[in-house]
Length: 360
Image (cartoon, rainbow, N blue to C red; front, side, top):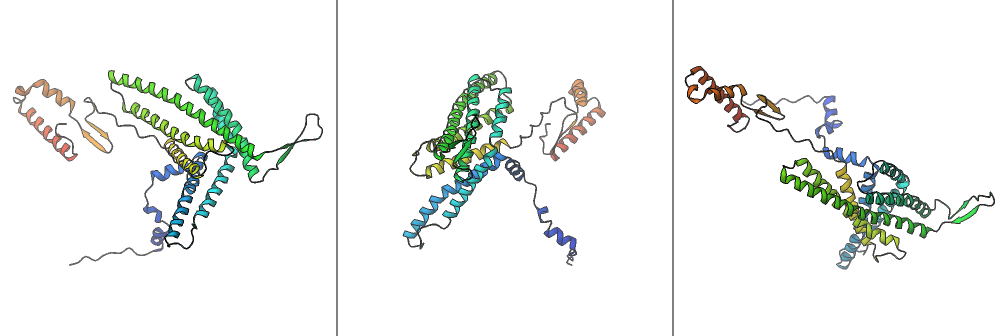
């Protein structure tokens, strides 16, 4: 005899649940939450678009070389790629957008300098480096924005500034090349100072590591301290990769004739810097790991709940009683012996059900 299959009636509510409520079949994603939290910041969005911009620039010569090889092999009619110009346009648009978004980039620098004077770094040398970095960025951002505005012909080639005497305004010409060069040179100065900063940071990390190693000889080093030291070293290497990628780029743009004959090198260094920068920001916006569960002691209560596990421990009062009576005298008390046997059997069965060792 076969059982009849029952179907739910196809009502309007069920159709709505299957169509408009289709996202109910998806589970909440920690990665999606992390991505939204990261991209909601100005820095996170800038790093993502930088990754796309330089990724497109790296793909352009690869696609063009592929098109030429296919043309020689007779597979393609034209020796050019149809996607490469679109990627070049995308990279140019993103570059302009990133420059435009940098209009308020000076505000975090001012905030950083204010906080720096109230909470200085541990050494005087680091304080001097960071102060110089901050002032170089204060000069960099206006020149960068002026260069961007001149490139897009949004400001005139000459400005008329008023004179102190109130006479005829003074005409000041804007040299586009000089503005662009000096803005990049200020950025290069920041990168060089950041490498010096990383050198000081490494010395402090080495001292910290040696102190923890000496401490671990006398007493056990806690896992959070090891994890914190590993996290700092990871951030240090990541920051080193970012600035070593930026250094040849800024040197190239700081020279009138450039450093590289082929722009592919600039694209490769920019792509490497984008990957390292995005990784750094991703780790910085990650939620802290949950604290480790507390270890259970022998004097713990009879039943301790550590979600989602349950550990059943010995009853302290019965344990003390059996130890005080002793094995020989225990069997002279039938009721006590029977109670003890039932207790041991009960504890063993519960431990077997919960997959705990039988000697708990």
